[in-house]
Length: 170
View: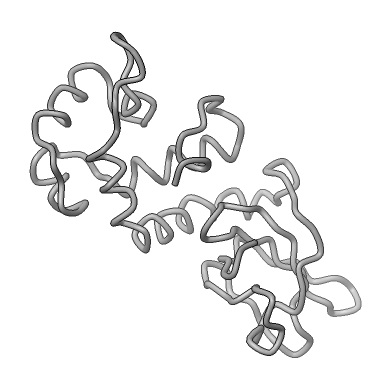
């Protein structure tokens, strides 16, 4: 279960009840939550959604788990910015992934499933390992780690990438 989630979009019903489209921080779970009365959920903000109801200050409850197709257009548009925040928060995990990724077979490496990494770039990335941070990755290779991982996760959540390595492994 997710303990924290970011708000991707908010909708208000005619009776004034707010609904938040959420993205969980740990497992990238897409959720629909109800907003407490007299509270405002801000798009792009992180809120507690865990089991301790006393700690929930904005999101009252999780209504259901949803799919990418259930998201509003606004939620889909905001998702990449939210994913960048999550990737930055979890930078150490992604840098470790880059440093430890292995070849799948003689012709394919796990890192080739990331956006912007083809055969030539892969060679550079592997030669310059290990990395200490995204800044280190950028200085050594010119690659933007935040952009790469946010794009990959977006593709996995949207169903554009059938090979799932980030929403499962990390």
